[in-house]
Length: 195
Image (tube, rainbow, N blue to C red; front, side, top):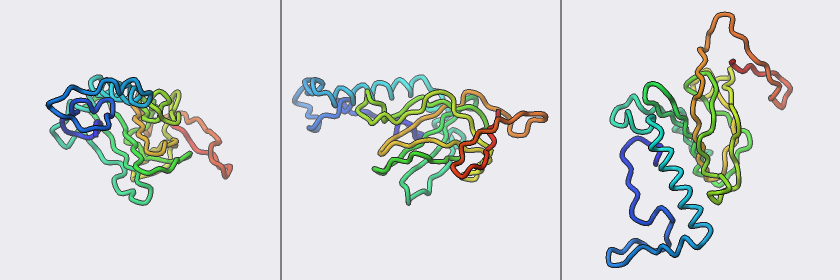
């Protein structure tokens, strides 16, 4: 919900995933941080809060329709949603998997041709995840998906969320533009990557 439009509410103590519900007559159970997974969840929450505060895409256009765009909201079969957030200058892309299934090769439509980097993965080892992350730059490919002309091929962690930032937008139809060709298709056909 941190990526979704609207104001955020984190109730007291939920940043470290306590077992018990908060009780106003008692103090928080800070000893829970002595347990590894609770400490990792606190780190996850802190990093997610930092991402929110440092990303105007998530709060600058919070009250209007122009700050959020659904890319794929209807994938009930795989339980994955994809949407984009923008502040009018920069863009984030959220991919959230509500299923226990790992997707080693998953194509998502992107709202802009260019270079993307992962800025957050809920599956990092330091959060208690399995380590499904994306290193380096991902370049969109000239392959239509979700009604978009460009797409990315990514890995999606089970019950995971992956957040990508557009770091370099490249106009789709640039005169005299060069395209890098990468043989990434298992059937041997080449795909164009915009560059």
